[in-house]
Length: 88
Image 1: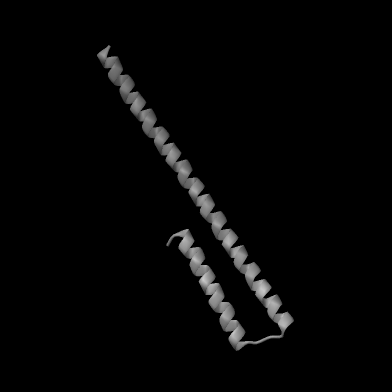
Image 2: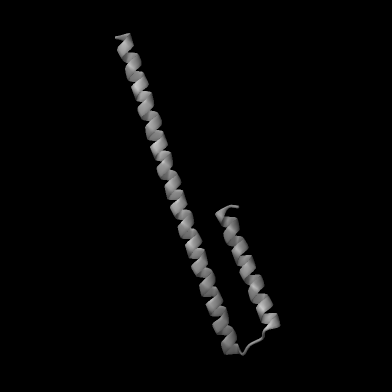
């Protein structure tokens, strides 16, 4: 599942949870606002963690890709140098 779909699914679940909570456990206006604020803050914290984790994973992939490209280029250069030595 992609990060975008995961985040979208998270928000859909969050909205469903809030709706069910409102329907089955009504609270006073102030309590409800505090509950919504707490739930929203918790959700945003989870989103930030997932985004941070995704960014770290992308950075790792880019780094591994760079290392792989460098390795291939070095191997190719060595092969070309060896071929050039044979030709000379």
